[in-house]
Image (spheres, rainbow, N blue to C red):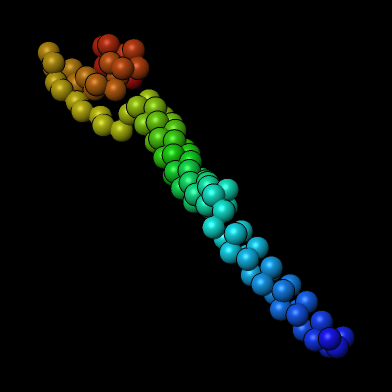
Length: 99
C-alpha cells in the first residue's frame, strides 16, 4: 500500500466517525430534553412578563381610583326652609349653608 491510499482510508474513516457522532448527538435523549426545556423557558418567560404587566396595570388603576374617590366634582344644591344648602357644604362641615 502506498502512503496516499492510507491517507485516503484514514480520511474516509474519520469522516464516517464524525458523521456517526453527529447522528448520535442529534438523536441523543439529553439533547431532546434540553430543546424541550428551552421552549418551556421561553413560554414561562413570556407568561411572567404578561403577569407582571397586568400586575403593574392593576396597581396603577387602584392608585388612580383611590385618588379619584377623594375628589368632589359634583356640587348640587337644594333649598330647604328658604336657605340654599349645597351638598359640598355638608361634606365640608358647614351644615347651615353659611359662607
